[in-house]
Image 1 (cartoon, rainbow, N blue to C red):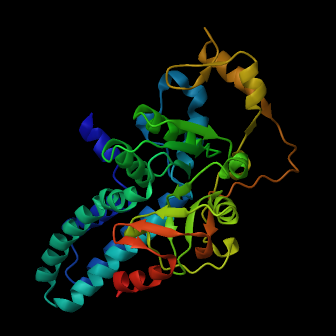
Image 2: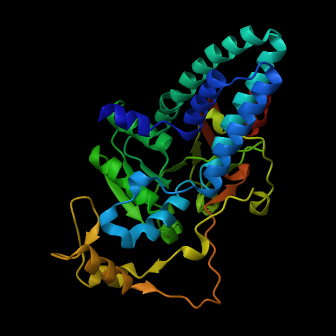
Image 3: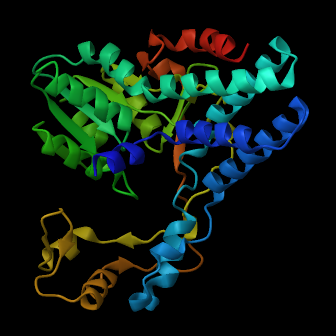
Length: 365
């Protein structure tokens, strides 16, 4: 189970780099141009899947619950939609840039291929260790007795805060915004609570209400753009504006392979990322909870002695059905300009937003 846990925690861009390394091993191309074409095709396939999702794997279909097949397909369709493709794209672009550089340095195809594989493996291992390095540089900023506010579920933020609590033995509290519509923050709260960190889950809409009680904000990022701003789970922009207004330090923890050659000036400039959109449902959770539902050991709400069918009906009773003329928007990410960011914690060290462009030049040169 430990091996399974490690595999499941591998960042998507690192997994993609490993896929590209396997493409190199299996490619039948006899020239660098042919090899680069194979790598570009594989990269495009992965990025498109991250944007649009894909067919539901047969292993996920339970023949005893055929009535839920449509729902499962809908979940699979949006499994990767939107949120991860910026980081995936930048990771693939970095690797392809590296292959191009290697081909210029070593003209011989066989030697170049071997060199790319060897250095590519080192690059993958370096990227995999990024979270540990970020935790080391960001941990000292978490002060004893402080209150930390975070948003969504970022593995690197979790790693940073867990190190501060378990390794550096600091006592602090964490406030987590719930992170709708996927309850990402609530899921992250479980991790903190299981590791003994006092944790409070807060409604997304209450971020301004609690901001005056916190000492710092730490968020992750889907991408760090050229102007030093970040793309992250929707709501991060609002959080940054409120933090600056109240004088609360706003930190971003992100791996360097998420540095991407985008230069948005506002949210309208972000690339199309997709979203659940019209299939998103709105649930009156307050009245549903008041109706008698209670939590099981995993923190999920359920009716006592209810069957799966009756539980589903219980939930449906509190779904707010909107007229077809009402448009539903569910942007997965937003853009937070550099002026709202205090510092970035990265595997390259602690950076100011203005230093990002210099690092991007070094990464892609």
